[in-house]
Length: 347
Image (cartoon, rainbow, N blue to C red):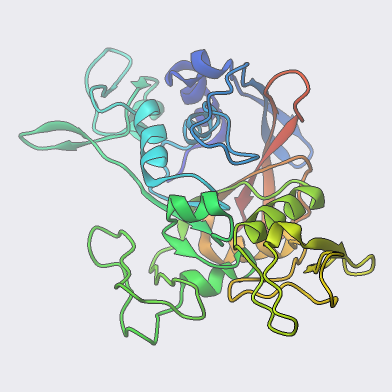
């Protein structure tokens, strides 16, 4: 059984150390559509991101998010970008250190975080009790999903590579080329070397996710920036019509007003006008965020959640999703204020 919103707020505000790190606090308030969490998270002037990728998470944001979901055992990091496996594990350990344990109101140990919350006690570690051993910290299954066109995303080596608008297909597909890409060892994704299908890795995951943390590009200008940086990293053009060898960065992005799609075309110095050519080149296509949320509904269990980090309240079907939290994220002066929307999957 998952936690109620009131329990999440109480556990977050009184137990986890992230409040001191990020000045974060959440509270429950009632609306005509039910209870919601609200609050403002102050990120502070900490610009020491481990990634130089534009739009990467502030250092304290991921610990704040996982601090609201101590009961999540299967987590999908959607649009993971430059997040590495070590960083997502570090965020979890930062909030749930292995040296801490669950106690009831009288200080007596209890077997689980959920039990500690129910009896009014304190839970400061996501642990499980092993007979004869004691409290042992456990880590959830955390899958990173990205398209890896960007150099920083490629360097992070995400667990699953593909298009977020085809999320349910990619996460439930059994690769026909190698015969078996199912997760058998400790529920962690396993891919045989060279297991590729149209340039995308597939993972067959038997169970739906408890939590999806999605950090999509906020505006179409951000999408275009990621696309340009990705294409410019490809190198020289291999168009043979006039033996163009100009670098991708010299080619000019051109966008259609109607569809907002884009392409790189030859610079003015080239003798013949042509579109950039490279084996890894793709044209720009705007992200359909509503489609991504529809796909998330296919891989999140009923009662599970999507944490959507954006500058807007994402459009969604109320029959599928219920908004259970709207949180403001303020980093520092001159930075955009982001909105963290938490959606709960309806049965």
